[in-house]
Amino acid sequence: QVQLVESGGGLVQAGGSLRLSCAASGRTFSFSMSKMGWFRQAPGKEREFLAAIRSGGTTSYKDSVRGRFTISRDNAKSTVYLQMNNLKPEDTAVYYCAARFLGVSTTASDYDYWGQGTQVTVSS
Image (cartoon, rainbow, N blue to C red; front, side):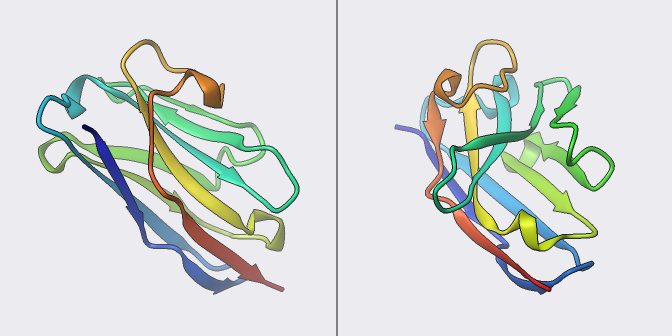
């Protein structure tokens, strides 16, 4: 059984920053070998890809967040992070982390495990 637990969400003013964390656990789960992604879902919208990071640290980003969001990982802590800067009201959504064992993907259905999500609200 694999568990992903997100934290760090909250209410922030436009222009502010938040750092999301996602802690992974599981008796047979090899975090260091997994590919991790961050997605978000706003009310009435589909879940959208934001960023992904390979086991070796190579990253991929959605164009609209590149330069504002940074994904990173700490394999020793089995944790992946999403640093979000210059937040905008349109960034308001539930943010999810996800894990998969094959190559990095921008498609939500390709991911094997999901966290419960953390709410991010950006006020104008």
